[in-house]
Length: 379
Ligand SMILES: [Zn+2]
Ligand SMILES: [Zn+2]
Image (cartoon, rainbow, N blue to C red; front, side):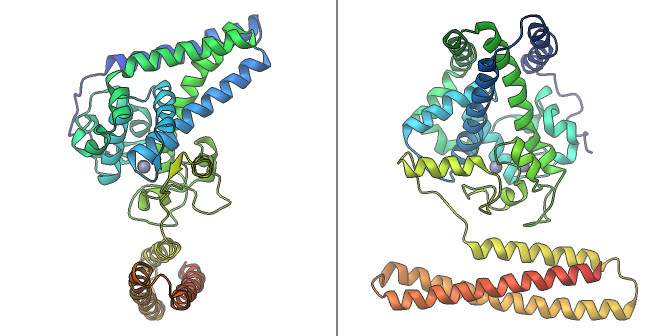
């Protein structure tokens, strides 16, 4: 852990005050009210519904749409994201996206990554907001595109008005409507906010500490199914850090990612467009590459000279075959793209190219199997 860069960063009192007051309310008034008067079922449901809207506004809106441009959205949907994202009290979309783009660009850089996991679990979870660290200063040069979005600019200018209105008016309106004003006020107002904060913060902390690294071993980001459940799909963070432009985080159909399902649903009803997907081959290529990196790492533990030479020979054979497939894929793909533009009508040729791509994907799949076995043998 490196703290030399900013040992005496001043405390950010408004943020600390907000965290302390909301957490105190959750451990005092919230249980006291429940024990004294009891919470209605409607209040609990309201809490879950508001929590979901806040979290999804952050994951689908702040994160995948505004920070990464993984798709485009109708202004009605952008407005909903901005209103409920503000309610989550994680700053304006503009500030959030600026910090997040820097996090991706300088991941694990202790001086520049605003919530660098290498500065410790606590720092990446919450500590980075407790003080005004230089790395946390929003650099708006990273979000010039978002500044041009009138809705994002409006939310940024009126952030506190929107945030306070949403945090008080929404729970009060629901509470009044369901006939449990104070129950909803405490649960959907305060408990929801504290839960929402810590669930989101897990992405910066736990998702950089606990889990697997199927796609890249170059950074601390991890894939973790449990964190994905807690964070509405953002737990597939290893995939995400390599392919941030993809609208999915859980790229496999079975991986728990309600955010990708919601975005797809929005595209079916015409509110989201241009959903970006990384080609399957590229994803598979990354997995094989990560496997090579792991094998290389494991080789360092082999002490017997003869065994080492044997594994090295097998590894370099595999690598040569991998490079051949990748080079072939690149040439076929560029040909395919040219054809897609110029000879769209030649369906036979397109079919041939697609078949070739399928064959190469199959070759990579088989190689992945061989690499897994090799890694297990090396130990
Ligand atoms: Zn991250
Ligand atoms: Zn991201």
